[in-house]
Amino acid sequence: MRAIKLLPDGLISQIAAGEVIERPASVLKELLENSIDAGATEITVNIAQGGLKLIRVTDNGSGIPAEELPLALTRHATSKIASQEDLHSITSLGFRGEGLASIASVSYLSLISHQPAGKHAWEIRSEGTRLMSPEPSSHMAGTTVEVRDLFFNLPARRKFLKTEATEFAHCEEVFRRMALSHADITFTLRHNGNLRSHWQAAEAAERIGAVLGEEFSGAATWMDEQSAGIGLQGMLALPAYSRATRDMQYFFVNGRFIRDKLITHALREAYRDVLHLDRHAAFVLYLAIDPEQVDVNVHPTKTEVRFREARAIHQFIYHGVSKALALPRSGVASSSPV
Ligand code: ADP
Ligand code: MG
Image (cartoon, rainbow, N blue to C red; front, side, top):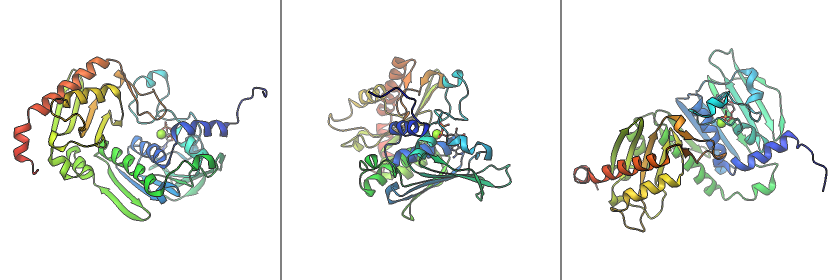
């Protein structure tokens, strides 16, 4: 055994990165969350070679003041919470202050930002754990983060990455989730220079149709259930549009995509009478709830949550969805093209 020593900060970041940055899609998720939290109305993503070579996200959000650029790449530095009270009612997608620092520690990163009030843009670069000084740059109001050669300094990790096509498919799935949960933002995605998706800001139902296709939205019914300060809205595919896998199950809590046993169970129960045992439901649902009623600080990737009133949420979802599935069957069938 060696003596106990505090690890160097760069190594701590790389260890933390191991939890949140698994592949290019995890980088994209962190960057898109930041752009959304910055209030962007337009987000453009450029990816090269499945994200193994390049992931670039440009937004027209609030930007970062020049003097804060080094902090943006520092661990546990965030503008989103300041106290324990804030932690108990999170309204932003990010709050851990670890995303950029983690990504930076395992890639070549460039962060260019221009605050509307600032004279011009500033850029800060890092090469793995080495951080450079900010330099003047040019950029419209907003921010661009460019991540190159992910895991260049962690060859063991890089070996776990799959083919370009597979990595890009994961990136596309992350992109779809963000676009589904933020219909009011215009999203553009390019891969190797080719336009893959361009979705103008729209109403939620319209965005769902654009992202998942008319076949889905034509076979789905819109639901809207409100009770005691909780809201559940979205589209439920009717049984005729069941799936062999769970590939079309999108559940968002306050704008965040989550996977949750309790919610999955409530939905399975609600669909049970109308769906064959080996088939899976398709839906896009948005739960809106007082942030104090839900804890998102459960896991570093923030895809798990804990509800204060778990039973009540389960009942609410089960009853709301059962009702929506029972009522419209005849009505929607007549207006449905399928
Ligand atoms: P977190 O999102 O948890 O705060 P990050 O490491 O992802 O942590 O980002 C650190 C900080 O950098 C954020 O709190 C925010 O102030 C700033 N930031 C990051 N990306 C952007 C962006 N696209 N636009 C404006 N500010 C940003
Ligand atoms: Mg973040």
